[in-house]
Picture (cartoon, rainbow, N blue to C red):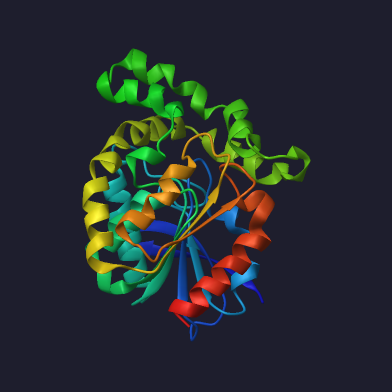
Length: 286
């Protein structure tokens, strides 16, 4: 098993991605969250690559994907989805399973709504699309939505600090010594790039469009009944367990699992999540 690190041109934007496994196997598209990038899948990819063709891009504004200025690229979840949509076409991914986490969820679910025929299955790891899955930790961000002033924007800059990154990685983890510092330190490096703070604040404001889309996504789930595995870090301070359970309301066959971890559950439970994914995917996509 080897991992290739590539960059591809997507409508003039250089998109970085990781690829592993044989293209003859079913494809799994991994979509990362905030403030991370495809490096968050460094332990999961080896768990999947012997059985699946695994693709993990860095979203625009994150990781090694080209960081266009805000004058050149409007950082919204719809525009990021446009890029990833075209990315799958450039790579000739005609059908694939989705793994969505955090910010990857609104991107992945938008793809599913657009192209239900291309989605073979959905694995959502703390990738929310239900109001009951949103915790009170979102209150400061919701205040920004209600009052998008400069003062409200500046009040959220603390979310972009190393202290907050550490909180995201360590909160709810029974033994924080099991969480490698590598991922969060790399996240902090990318966050510290000139102009990235404004990009992230743009996305925090635009996140309200994801909540507005919940009804549309739920209608897609009810209509198309894709195989769904909701595997959740049960101690996540942002996306709480009721958000995982809610998938069964629209997809009664959905499988719901919990692991004793926080938001970045792959940091402590990559092997368990990988095994659960293999078992789930083997039943639905081969």
